[in-house]
Image (tube, rainbow, N blue to C red):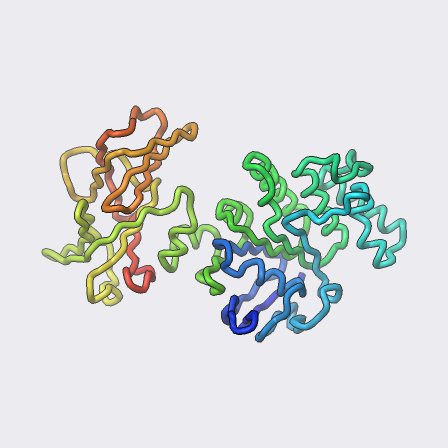
Length: 362
């Protein structure tokens, strides 16, 4: 499998720059997921790899070979599109084999490849059906099969599950994960869904406004986000944020807000703390637990405004000075709207961000 590299990659439409000086190396046989909000540049980046968008400046290389200006057919890639892009008048077998026929592969080789991929994707009994006779999930599997029969070194996927309902997305996500174990290819996958990113990717690349904010394993991005944007994007429900001031009293460093006081004595990099003392505190909903005792230190007192029952767990919604606060609790707890509840905060689960730069301090 080739190593894919971006070197100072830029894309502009006239004076509008949409991709800004991206540098990235994707290892061989790696499942790389580009994730971010709509308009962040992830699909544009993928289309530049595919050759469907031109590169304004910089390079895309595969195993050291510059492919930035090659035609798509010369790049040894296959692509799965968001809208399936199947030929409605052809059955599944013909849709999957069409590209191979255009490339003048022998009939026996085409049959062998289509049969093997159809078996892997559970399409064997559907080969003679047309797309209009298939469900959304089946059509997406056909689109994937059409890409896989080409046996290209790199597989590109542009939000392939976004047109499916929530239940089918979960099923297809599991099928993708199992398929990943059966094929040895570089996969570059684009999505706006961070759950897809965390469950599928060997490496996640988080983008915002045409810039890479951070890349790493799902665990690295979840546990050690480099800034507030990444921290808030990774994880569901998202991280809670509260404005605070850092104050040192009696050798103890605390983050104080109007309704809370967190002792952050575990922070030992005070040279990186903002001189203004203004920070944003981040706490994940799962890091809040029911408080015991009467201490006001490391405690949040919340008035429940919404209680979302989601089966084994419930998500309680409140706010502090206009900031939305979510808490994950066991559904067996008898909470209801209007209750005032105290939650303990373990300071080892607290994240601290500079309020001005939004960079992580701790």
